[in-house]
Amino acid sequence: MVPENAAFQFNPDPMGISGSTSTYTGTYTNELLEFYLNYGKDLGSSTLDVMAGYSWQHFGEETFSRNLDENGLRENANAREYYLLSLFGRVNYTLFDRVVLTATLRQDGSSRFSEQNRYGLFPAAAVAWRVIDTDRARGVLNSLKVRAGYGVTGQQEVGGYYPSQARYLESFTTASYQFGDEFITTLRAEGYNANLKWEETTTYNIGLDFGFFNDRLYGTIEAYQRVTEDLLNFVPVPAGTNLSNFIDANVGDLENRGLEFSLNAIPWQNDRSQWSFGFNVTRNINEITRLTAVDDPDFRGVPTGDAISGAVGNQVQINSVGYPARSFFVYQQVYDEGGSPVENLYVDQNGDGIINDQDLYRFENPAPDYFAGITSNLTVGNFDLSFAGRANFGNYVYNNNQSNLTDFSRLYNPNGFLNNVRSDATVLNFSRPRYLSDFFVQDASFFRMDHITAGYQFNEVWGPDSKRRLRVYATVQNPFVVTNYDGLDPEVFSGIDNNLYPRARTFLFGLNLNL
Image 1 (spheres, one colour):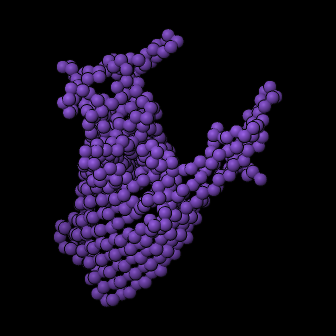
Image 2: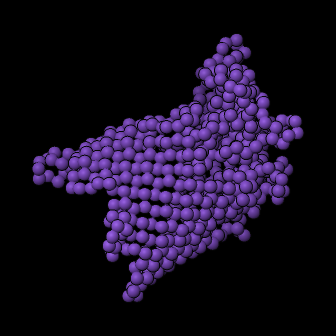
Image 3: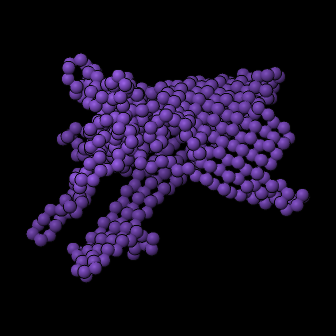
């Protein structure tokens, strides 16, 4: 029986000769069972807390389709699933309410991996020391805490349900084999990787939390290092080495290191008004430290990233040992005396007198050198005003819209009409697309205001003694962006901008009623 909410399509033939109808239904499940036991003991000058638990999670998918046309009825049913199992434990020990020691251990298992790689063991430990306690502080500096931590986490998110298992699936109807008047659907072998295993990230951090003036000014400074081993990715494989052109694989190691700083303040506060302000900034450096594809030290890297529009199959990013992930891999553009790019003229990087793929070089990457955030909340009487914004500095984006749509070849079509092209085509003066020029890799640093909200609260709508409150407010999301980037939106995580539509600006008006 087909459910009432099944997708349905009916294509009648107005000539009455043929037609088709199809139905589709899908059921997706996410089941979770989790429980834990906790034990706590007060030891006088110290406390002990122990916790142990178990988690079971099941993800399932069932689909059914039915198609009827002049060739008869065809039905297709599919079911897929995978499981996650976890055992975990934690011990907290607190001494004199000043020193806190924490140790955790968890074992996770995923059915996505083969039996020999199914389970991962992930330990963690942390220590914190309250050098100055808020309750005992007497002076400008009222709180100070030093902390350090170490931890390993696992990641098993890959594209499919069975990436490490050999499977045979039913082929498409266009790949049927004919026996006389009958077409037989064949089975095809799927690509897989039996050696696939958990991606592991080891994090080291040390930090300092502080507070001044009874926490009217407080913040955090933290240094960290994250080493990710056996990165999971969907990558191409050489022809003939597997049953597919792309497979899930552990492709290498990546290191991130940086420094975080946050500061929060309450500049003024009284019975009728308050202003709180927050700011944070992070400096991050990422570097690929190992690639499993090849051990050759002269190997330039593995092409990666989204394929660019207009150049089928082309990628302009690469992962190379010793460089940031997804670095752009392009030609260095040559410019004339007026600062305009010279078409098809690039720097000969190796000096052999020939411009070819050996002259491609690594130029910037999509990850910002610095990213920051800012928040503000102001209340004066019954009026409130708040905003939140963030900024990226040093992130670069490949402007694919510009590289694909700004050459003069776009002016003409076979019908003899003139097409519209971008106005900057007259600046570039390119006769045809030059996709691999670093001219199109642009600084996309920006400041974006995420939202601004203003509100007013009415306290005596139902009389002076009523506890009911009414607040009216208005919010604008994405009100403005400050950037020198030429594209529609500088915030492109992948680094490849082929988006033809700007991010929406949203206006909200609302009421909050407290009964």
